[in-house]
Length: 345
Image (cartoon, rainbow, N blue to C red; front, side):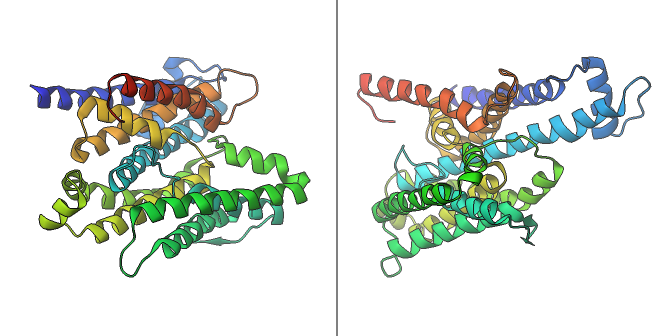
């Protein structure tokens, strides 16, 4: 009976996600009727032969080139960060672990800051300008943390966490120095670090999609080993799991996804921390259910937050602020509930 309920939760989450994607695509500041929005989606997305008479090119552009890619990128970002959070929490056995624990966010922010200050316009691997430097900064910070933490062929989890915290704080201080000495770029750097989907289109989706797809494939093929890891590293080794290889695999996959996403969107916090906890309450700790549902709920959560960010005020609020405002208090509620129940998250 429990298994049926858990499967039902996944099915309902997928249905809810599809409905929210649709609603968030057809509503917005521009006044476009549901009928017109439906016809545009049928014509542009499914290439159906529908009557487009009376629909302006402006309305078509708003739906197809502004709202839909923004919603899809929001889903990709939220889904990816939530799955990465589940992976990190499984590897570190630490409920406070999230996709930014290894200094990925501060590395990307430093790279983006340098790109903004220098007005960098180069490109490589489908990335260009500030996005490229943010991606490089994220990966260099991961490489630094990993090299500091490595002891022979092993990478102790505790050392990795502490190294990540130290590198994160150091790079954050360097970013502050960059802003102090380049005050004309301070607002732009600050806005980037808050995270936003504003102005993003199909190009950004196509840029991050290969990295996200490759990373998610690696993570989903690790579910069985991560489930065995729940019994402890020693038991996992006895059952034939290559624990050190699994750590490297999950860390690499999560890092490449996170680096790709935040290089385009900026830093969007709390998604990878809170969503896996909520899903764990609904489905239990098994990663075979935890990761798929985290993907769906993470994407849905970020789409809703982004819709709120562009709707509640005349000036758009960075979506990273909305996720923090929603995620912070909810996470405190989970902590309080766990303490009352005498358990840990």
